[in-house]
Length: 505
Image (tube, rainbow, N blue to C red; front, side, top):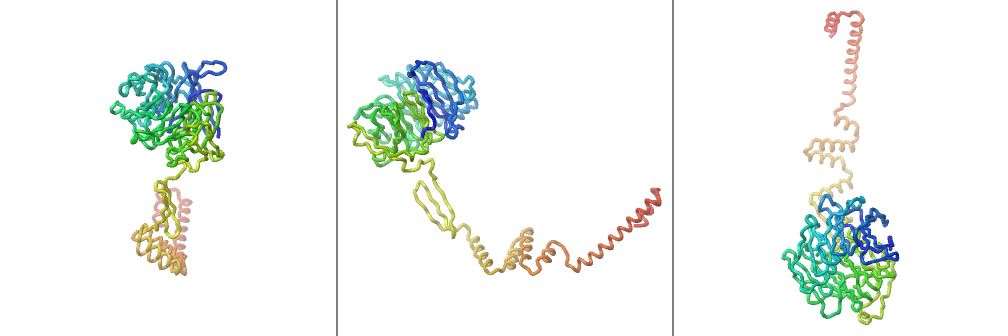
């Protein structure tokens, strides 16, 4: 389902997972012109709430953008909403304070032109949020620290063959592992040693790499996509078996331009390409026929960028060359009809199959475990990781079961007075003892008299004697009061009044 579509050609990035509400930043894409040949550039911030997207802020910028990434959240009080890093032409990297951008004030935090050529690769570290990597021409890769932008670090030395850095991706499980993508190969770096640890290349097929993405849960798995029209494939590599790809995800008719792996469900990966398709894959499927999950939509133009929202995995943002930026929700993906994928491409004809709806619920909707009590002391529980349901007879406290059986017998026999008497004798707490005695009176013949005795009130005979005694006391008090009145009338002398009071008492 399309939530909203914008008439603009932009690159976009979602706000980090820790941010609320969800925001999406859009910057005018570089090397793109509209019919009016307008060369202006803007950076806009939109807020997403309840399937409604509204413009929050917009600023003019000096240059257009090849890449936007949003990270660095909760790293500094000054930029608690994070930093938006932008890769531009002529080796320029611009950093924008997202909090200031939302208030439409001067949000530029830093600007650097250390790179050579266009900066097309940017990525923030998920663990050390103050670090981000950038890549440009001549195999240049820099590691930047937001707290000190003057001197970036270089992971090892440049390769002998200078090439453009196509993409960069930090590992989602190991913080010091960085992947860098070139047209013909991929290099994985260990930043603790500042050296490459492995190089991935497929010499058996004609490929031209365009995008890479690490498995969000398995540290050794990475997907690499080819933009070559003769071999539009997504290869799943496992660094434990790096001699060849583990799987080939084939379904696009032409080259793949972008892909994104869902951070909340490693069984969902989405890609877009020159065949105007948006395809959702399950790289974890053991059956090759089920690798392709769904053909989301066909567009009129190529989509050159696609991003999965980290905060709400139902949301996906795409950008196309025909000047349209679309935000999708896969919430009603079940409504899509099955679509037959067919083509005249002989190289991949045998691998194509019918794209079906999502047969399994996404993992962010699944309950990992649960339990519920049933009659008779039974407990039903399930564990999602074990895929098992257990039915257990629960015995928590044996003494509790004994008292429970005893109480059941008392309820059946109706001998409540004896039960309350036994409870009052067994307890050492004076307050509880009084409570049980009071409950005992509820089952006696004369409960009111027994309750009055517990509360300290006497019986009827004693009450009558007490009544007469109190009556005589009242009469004496009245006599004294009358005498006091006479004192006030007969004498105004204080000494005489005092003597009369003593005489009367």
